[in-house]
Image (spheres, rainbow, N blue to C red):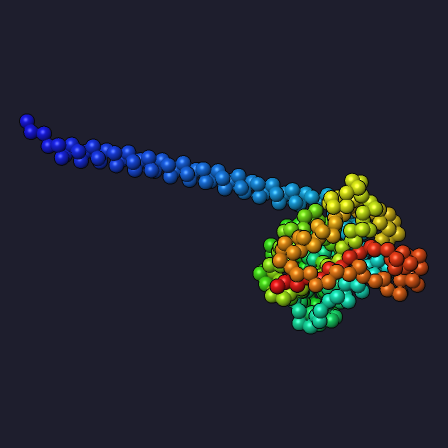
Length: 298
């Protein structure tokens, strides 16, 4: 009997090839399952992060000032000292020419800035606020003024950035007295940089770091800290929570996001405030309260 060793060798090789292919398929299956598990874990982590961010803002924005008393707030800020005669004229003095600009108003409140921006030639203003009650006030004002074609407004937690806004779609972004309600500024500032056009500007106001330091519980100026106060914006005391942070904390997030800081000012209270309350006027003339920062996308 003659043995054909070539056939035997080919048979053995074919068995090994089948084994290798089978092992390859098994390995690919294991890799696919592992990848899906990793993706599921990543998705859960992302979901947890978003959930934590939303919960964080909800805890801060529990104040009734911007929800239950939204209409009272709108009436109060029309002619009060801190908003009408200190914050607004100080920030407005830093604004560029507004003619034909596409503008985002972050933390738009009841739309007082939107009215000013449109009256001074802005092409369109997108108003975003955490409070649905504030958003509804803005919508109603736009309808009454016949400006619904120039005002876009919606409610969103700005701690999540600006997911609804397109890249390089805005000429100017403003955020009056809003960022102190956010624990982390990184995502929002990065998204503001993303949606701004080249040479676009970002202007905002917030609590002065020195003014808030007197409310510290840690005694550490450089430690970000949750603060709770009672404000009497429209007579009755309303509890409000916000974050106290250092100037370094603010400026480092700005430069890390790509911005060039053009100007930092502490504002100036209007002489009209003296007619409303001479003591408050004197205090704001001699002590820091808000800080105003102007930035450029380069």
